[in-house]
Amino acid sequence: MSGLTKRDIQLFVDGGFHTVEAVAYTPKMVLERIKGISEQKASKVLIEGWCMLVEWLRIHIDFIQHLNSYPWDSQPLQRCMPGEAS
Image (cartoon, rainbow, N blue to C red; front, side, top):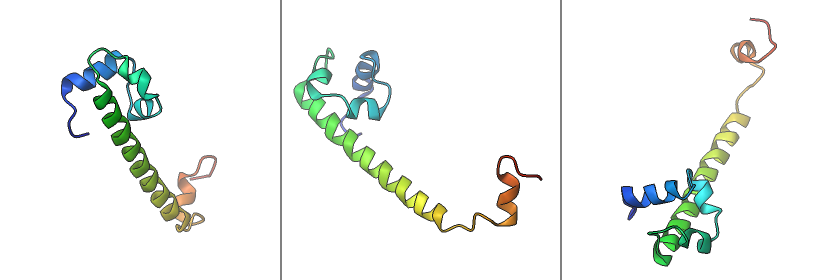
């Protein structure tokens, strides 16, 4: 995230937020209670966090669509499936 310093990130970690998801799903007023995080910084981090989550979701959807186009009954993949004989 642009505009975040190592100190900002450390403030979030010290506040108990260890992932982008944790920050993105937290109400802004809760983030503002973290000592050193301003209302403006909390707003920016929430917006950037949600943008990252949307991008990750798009990537996962593309990946799932790619997996759905793969012939899962192919011989090489059958060896990788749990419970299948090698």
